[in-house]
Length: 295
Image: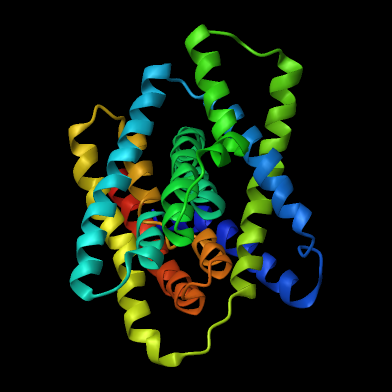
């Protein structure tokens, strides 16, 4: 069983490591257009392809969306209370604790551990988390929020289109599905290499914040995993769907939280530390979820 887990996880680590090395030694991953290509073309294609291939009704997808919203809302309430008691500002610390890295780490992990069914769940969950980034994340860190931003979000548009196609029972032509499949196949490895590049770009200087960053980093996967494990017990989900949802909510602090903190002059160095420290915890948690799902 451990061998199977290692076989699934090692490619994820190697691709992220390759991205880290390439970012340090070359400029292959430096053009900002590459990240935009993945966000605006690759991820929407991956989402639409996975949604159309998954064996579930539109009601099943709505259940996944509802479950994700409920988990994020519950984590936000608990984390908000905890931050208030700790005397930390919600503006910059709440979004990193609520929004996991379900994108360039969660999606490949779900596919590696749970196959095509896990991938389908992951892209739906990741789309909801992306909406949370553009609402909760941007709203809190910037101090303002504009709903029009969601209308420009490719994964959100792909999610809506996929739902409409499922509801109307419309099947796309085989050449279109083949194109979506090819785009999906190249998106996952690029996402992991871009994750490695993001980690290579992180910097921090104040060593005194290590303890606080460590506690917050541990809180992200622990809180997400506990809340998700509790809520899925009350939902009519398949074992793979439930395990994938729990695994996704144990993912580390999202790199986009660091980007938003940098943009809005928040504690970016501390959030960088939170990303690095929460990563190994999340990998252990993901392995535990996968192991329990096999028992």
